[in-house]
Image (cartoon, rainbow, N blue to C red; front, top):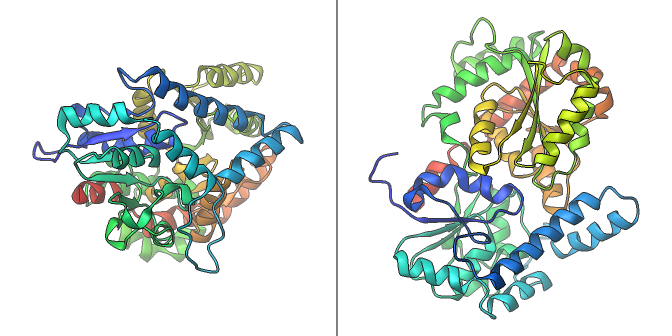
Length: 428
């Protein structure tokens, strides 16, 4: 980016991957290129850290035990009820605060987060305060941060908890990833002038500017892998030429499926089920599977142990993405996406990566927000619900033969908002 780019405080939280992944493409805006984690920064008071840590551990624990019959499912249902997104219809005033929001503000009123905001005021309180989680935005407003406050939303629909206690009086400005979030924020009482439809911030090195050279080149090869029978190509050749230009004569990589595990490590068993189902094709080098462990060493070890059982450990047609550092992980993940044809994941913030021309195979959602992300993906035509992973070698082959995933890839590319990062930068 040019040196004239306006700088900001970019603030995330390292609870799962979602809020950090959302902040990562905005790191060029961050002062000194450093993203601040509100729950884990240098000098954070132990009292503040403990509040954040209890919340993180509780969420990860509940996410892991959800698969336990009755007890785990009941515990998750209780937690999820507190974060429930109310039905959109009938359209109505939803500005009344909920229990979770009142609990957050009760802690803020006891000075939770004051230290962070006062520190940023001292260092440069005139910079825009840009956060990918609502709690730091509430803290900044409550403790009178003098600069502008922006909150970047990371889901396709949101609960009342994303808007402050007194939304009509708030000066927090929201960057919405889609039009549903725009309408939700209005229903929650946020003033229209404080809502911007920007799109989700996607990695700009994958897109390569307004002309999208990298993205179009990558998608050209991807379409060839996703439609080897040319079922989709033969029907929509003119559409492809209009958006991508001339396609290459052959793809620059084998058919590649990426399975991404969430930050709590849940659903890792699906990745092994995929590898087991496709093992013959992997051995034959007909396709490649990438298993994303993120920064969770236990997940990496789980993958390695089970791949060894399948005699796949060390096979060049299967890869594990793992890094100890979160930013190294995001960089490696983004690089691998350029040669990925299918993204298989629960409907987290990665749902918005469909705009990169990546068809999403939707693993079971965890929580109310992911249920709504799933609905958005399905209604938009960007993704399909997974069938039984044990039989992926059958149904996945059928989907590719029919060109279904090529269609989803183009749908996401054409209809999805790809310039969220640039739009957010322009607003700031």
